[in-house]
Image (cartoon, rainbow, N blue to C red; front, side):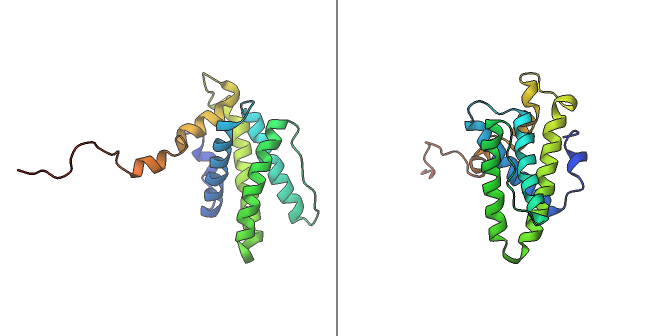
Length: 159
């Protein structure tokens, strides 16, 4: 957390929520990606989506492309999710796009710096993915944490 908190402390509440939302998409995609994602793929993918949003905000319609296939697949997933949120924002679409670009650039920075600042001993090339996975927990963990595990014991005690 000492690596992450100083880098996200200045995010607004909306930017922070978008940061977590995009990071959840990244982790979900990383769980099924073949070949396995690396931090460089994550950084390249979110930078690609951020650049596309920033370019569109300046009035130029151009979709940036990632150089690697795994990064492009992730960029497509992240881009679709961010654009879906922007479409649902209605009149606030401009603010959502701006905040999304900020959140995406923050993930890019964390993914690029993770190996040097907080390396993972098992997979140094995926240090950010490992750290983010530990911070956010495994997919579906929040759902199982809310419900107590079912017991096979009777719930009514009859004397």
